[in-house]
Length: 319
Image 1 (cartoon, rainbow, N blue to C red):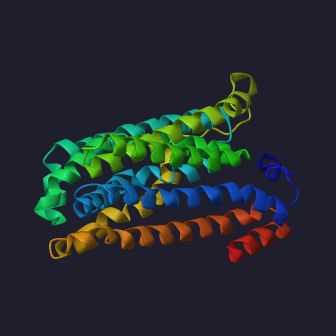
Image 2 (image 1 turned 180 degrees about the vertical axis):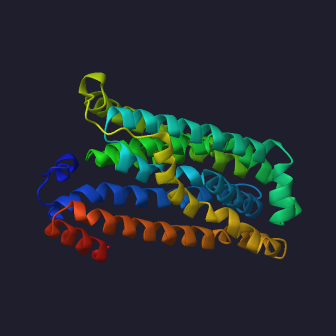
Image 3 (image 1 turned 90 degrees about the vertical axis):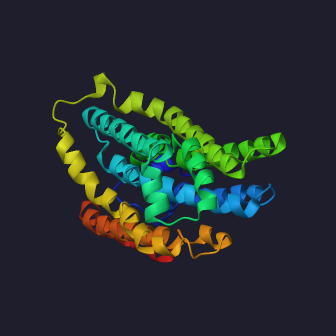
């Protein structure tokens, strides 16, 4: 059977539908596995004390954490597109580290300063009984954005060089870690549900980031070593990298503009319905990203043969 590494290379004359499918399947599996982590955690919280309160608080913690994380989400696309040489890889790593520091600082400000009261209490109008649980959850989610950034950076390198199977395997590691953490903390008992959920997510993404680091290490040593550096490789400047990444990050930052629009409705909403309110944010962001990706497919289609572009379109239409 053709491996994902063989399914794609820059010199492949034609990407058949079989090759594309083999290349795509691990990435699709990754998204499906990620979709199950929410039900796994919420199912555990539903069996703990103050279930309604904890599920509501946890839903808002996740919403806020993803909002803070939004600039690092497109790192997967950026890394996939630009990790061409040793110089570009090192520039991407530098950029990723900067994003990790910035988003972690913002997250810390949300967990330990008055910024939390301004945004969550005043602007969003969250019910008072949820505030301390949300604040606590934000503190336990401190390293969420940094782990996501590093994971997506490394996964972009893997995807660029055809190692997509490691992406799906990494998500399986993440889900397993989340389930194990939830079970362990549930057995310990007497731990607030929002802490259980936040710790489980943190452990999961850190485990996935470590797996991505391990999976990409050999590839990076082969492709981006000092010996493999070519003199005619085009240099990726930091400004050009920021310019490439910014429009992708801006689409995610729509979260920050949309939350205040429904903020006044939070206080009037029954607690049991609060976890459903972030849904429109995710849908809007998802379809914005889908639009950008479809545009990028159109822009990149001139780089492949007509038959290859046709096969890519067929798979997209089928999905």
